Length: 238
Image (cartoon, rainbow, N blue to C red; front, top):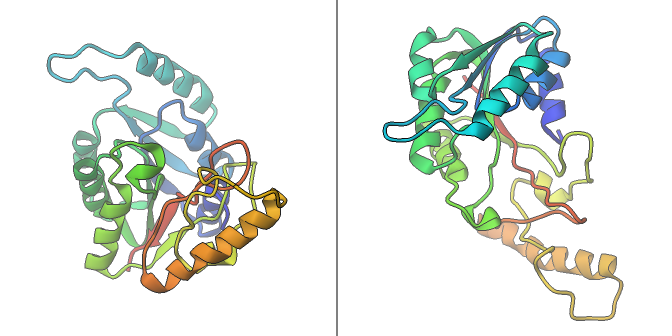
């Protein structure tokens, strides 16, 4: 599975009819989930600028909410303007086929999201999300990888990761990625030689592939002018 587009198709192939996305923003992936599964009832949860105590409502979030409303109008979507931990209380346990989590990525919050929303997914359903990458990759405090790994270890789930690419713009994923660990950033590493970049890249990838035996998951970017990551994750509950 290369990207979240294929994940949306996978949900449809499994016959999933009821799902939730936590962290919707403008609704792009919500629309993709619904377009690939016309019978889907999707609950779209986002704070969309709901003010925190002592803070005002963000203008960008208000605009994002209006765009989501317009984009998702053709589909069977229910937009829920609440914080994740408030919204999750409105759902019965085992009531969802899947949940896709792409909300606040700080460790305590994503840990809570996975723990609480997983309770709402029935046995055989899927808990999934975005940004299974390390903090160094984006120079920010991301806790997704840690939270996902802890849940997997505690509950014995099998973690699946996507390959390179964004929706509609894929790159071939190396065998080393498919084996379950991530290559370090070749984009940020300099090519000091006069050899063709493609040759240098292959040699550098081979050098880092030895990390597979260590169990480490270094961060990486894929080739090209844009940043890509195998950062979509999912696990089937049992």
